Image 1 (tube, helix red, strand yellow):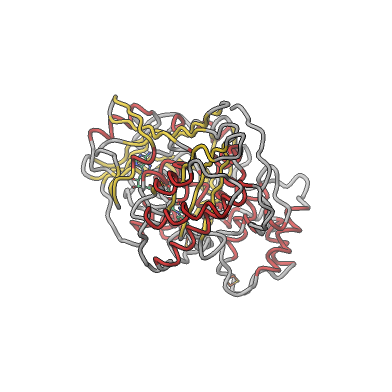
Image 2 (tube, helix red, strand yellow):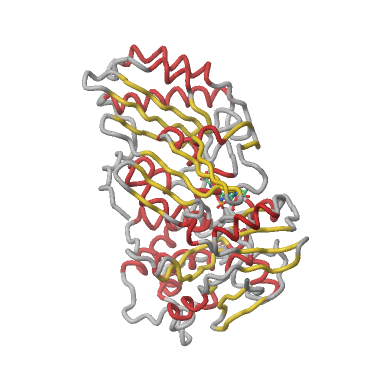
Length: 493
Ligand SMILES: Cc1cc2nc3c(=O)[nH]c(=O)nc-3n(C[C@H](O)[C@H](O)[C@H](O)COP(=O)(O)OP(=O)(O)OC[C@H]3O[C@@H](n4cnc5c(N)ncnc54)[C@H](O)[C@@H]3O)c2cc1C
Ligand code: FES
Ligand code: FES
């Protein structure tokens, strides 16, 4: 057991033997180290002003991730190099991204600029480097600028990303891979004492033992929900167990029939494998929050939080997924839909945790669709999320249907009446679907809240079911602004 936190900052190893379990990375940067180039805007992961890059040795490779420092717990950076805007200028010359931003007048008040630059530098370091306007927009979806207008920022991004400087010296410490590999020692970390601690186990068995013996402790995976409990709800979390150092929770395993995702797989890591199941999942993940949130937030956290509007739950329920849970040495598996019991209540005992998910791939004859409805295209939580798995026989009749919605009830839930009503109907005869569309009204009595009225939700749900059936039935009506992408080949990892 290691009793200290170790990471690299400004070229030196930092070793801390005492931290408050609720201390955020942004607070440490700005208040302890006076690294004030990194800004605080919203303090809830929305504006990107606090974006920094974490370099980490993971899965046998060096990885760079843009993250929101405002909602990342300081304890979670063990083993990383923290790179901030002050690290960019090498030998007195600005980084190519900074030069392009200056050349194109990409800053006015400059408050958002460090965050925008860090997001673009993360893109500059990515393989392959995004160069199209669409991918640049995706890189910047988590960064708000209030005054410049995005055109000059886009122009700067396009220029810098398309014309990388050969032999750019890079940022941060020179022999990064070796230094970070040395920090990835695979040891469990524990700081503090019995009543108030930050733990970051490296092994599954240590997590199992710690969670069982401290059932009141808060499990933190990516902290993109939990971070806001601290910064916005001002909660004090005395016992924190972070899951982000456990390699075994990051397993992704694909075969012909299933996809297994460990609970600690981040949304960014899950995206390619989900996209290989269906292009709608790729689109969904691209619209899931921002690159910063997807780099930290995990599949397990998105399910375990029990949110009625979590994006993955309804999609994965429709596909037919199994949730894997562990408590001490005991493991159990349940259908994902059974996990959500009521608002704020899941089938999880104190000390029990989600270890992973197995997702079933659609068989031949099965058609999947999912649609997220939110007020903004990017960086927004669903108002309604609908997911549909429709099996059609060679005579073009619906053999079976699995339909799940988020935002229509207190939990993500299946539309069992609509599913039953669809079974046996011809897929290409819209007049006959009316019975199923009506059945949706019996499946759900949605509420009105700040996102939408109950009536709006009910109408949208009907429209989404109609849209899925229209597409699967092969009607030539225009149902999308962007065409649905091709299904990628299944890769075996
Ligand atoms: C700006 C912003 C935008 C967002 N946009 C979206 C969006 O578009 N769609 C969407 O669905 N969500 C969105 N979210 C919510 C959030 O990012 C996701 O729910 C994310 O998947 C949570 O994962 P996490 O690993 O960060 O969870 P954490 O914050 O670490 O944990 C969330 C909850 O799950 C528990 N938990 C975590 N891991 C486990 C485990 N293995 N076993 C048991 N319990 C566990 C924690 O104790 C906590 O209760 C957004 C959040 C922010 C800040
Ligand atoms: S301060 Fe707005 S995302 Fe962190
Ligand atoms: S330049 Fe002022 S917020 Fe972007």
